Image 1 (cartoon, one colour):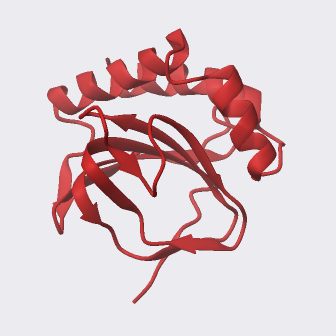
Image 2 (cartoon, helix red, strand yellow):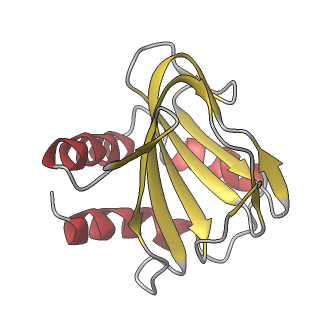
Image 3 (cartoon, one colour):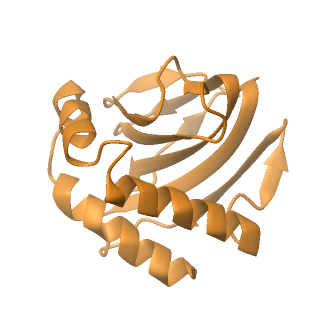
Length: 154
């Protein structure tokens, strides 16, 4: 899996969500169209594991979190950026989503949860904020950010 192949894979998801409000309706839609047991979800999860093994994804580390921006905001992804983090039973840095955030939760251990949610999708609306937290195990979290917008607390 190369970075371009990964971007191509993610475009199948961004094609379905671009132009939609980042709200609970989109969260429901993502969990219906791309549920955690779907081929599309499994393909992205497998691609993330492959890219991490290849060394180009989650290749930075701070505070016990492995992370990295995988795709900068691009026309191919309708202005979304893609970040992936690997977290194991910890709380990440508080941050704000000026334009919202779409999270794909991929548990690496069976009961892992991200902000209280198991495998699947969570959507945070514009101007939302949180301290991302993984409990009950280890998980990969893929973040789609409109125009890559994120503001970390100082």
